[in-house]
Image (cartoon, rainbow, N blue to C red):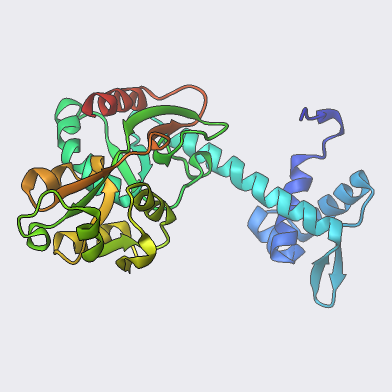
Length: 291
């Protein structure tokens, strides 16, 4: 959409209306904008004249919005918030600003943290701010430089680069397995399982392995981290990305008893389109080398 600035209302009138609509008061809007009550009212009336629509009206001691006013108020609030975040992001991207990275808590704890010491040893000049979150966040809205996401890599409007495959394995604690290495499907089905809650993909992978989740003794655990912890304690078998279990397997706290392949899914590095900070280029090169 190309903006016709010749017919665009003044920014002053839009700010006055957004504040008055949000606070439902010309007086409070005037205080927030550091102008007079009359100035706010004049700007709002001028905006209404420009648009040929009533936007706001007096309702008892306060103000109320028309349907058009409510719609415009919501759009302006979102627009001004986006501008404010853009300005904050611009101010925060100086040489000393930390590189903001979003990723799942499990990937942060199991894959990145054991390697991060190596990055800081090689690049102490690049500060990293990790933001573990199970939810997918809007990189631009949250001012995030890099996201490490699990999925199929198809995220329109973003720059996406493969980081590492997401082969899944079935693991169990030595106390649970009691020396058994090559378990049949019948033996796997007879053992208890611990699986993250609200994770239907895990059940799909188990079916592809030849197991029937409906007849398994599965304890559903609220989070991925807790499910891993339960598996380490020997409470049940667990299915997880092999990349997140390297430390457990190396230490012997968990043993692999089966592998589930799904080539359609992997971990990806996701960034906003456009110029990349030098610190971001350094970190992504290191990530690819660390796989």
